[in-house]
Length: 81
Image (cartoon, rainbow, N blue to C red):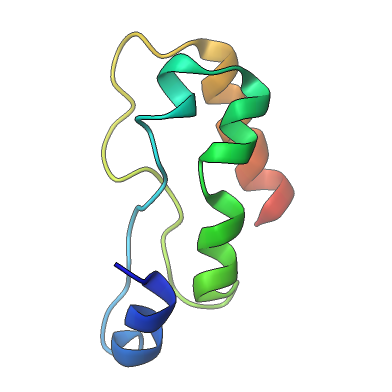
């Protein structure tokens, strides 16, 4: 779904949560892959910084994810948000 479109249409009524990809680079890639593939930048561009969007993964980070990749995800949040 197009998050930007949803935000424009329903953002005054809803707060969106999640949307960060956890099935691609996070479990299988490098920290660099995580920064490029998690869609943090795309999420922020779609909804804006003052949107009320809760920028995070759609659900918990499950066991087996490399700790360096999880830290890269948190770094991407800090750098881009």
